[in-house]
Length: 207
Image (tube, rainbow, N blue to C red; front, side):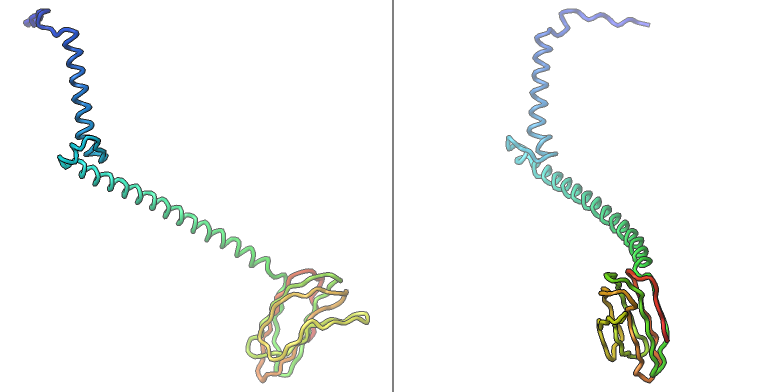
């Protein structure tokens, strides 16, 4: 194995030469950065050389593509969030709707009124109690009288003729049975459905 000859000290660069080479290399790097890299990658052309060489246009295209890609990414994130929110809203709405449907009505009364038949549906209420109601007549029209009377006191809340549905609320001014007298004036049987909620102790049905 041959040993490499040692270089002569006279052949090695001096500190001044090394420093000068470093400075020249640094200046060259800055020139390349300013005239080539910045225009070509970021469309930044402080000297105008990049525009002459066509590098600035290339950089503008890259910047535009990068901006469009970022906009697409943000849009995708927003869509994902919207879809997630929609799913959560739908699930939440389903639970809320189910719970609301279960809590909406305390009682539902269903019966059939034959032609010419009558019926009474009343709630036993104390003074100041409030009841919400909704009713439908399927198969025909009914006449009704929503009223109450007890201990010499009486009140007419509402009357109707030839009706197929109704809803509202009543507030009892006195204790007693408050509700409807129904009559089928049509020639076909009518299915009545009455839904109730509120403050009452019993539902009294008389057919």
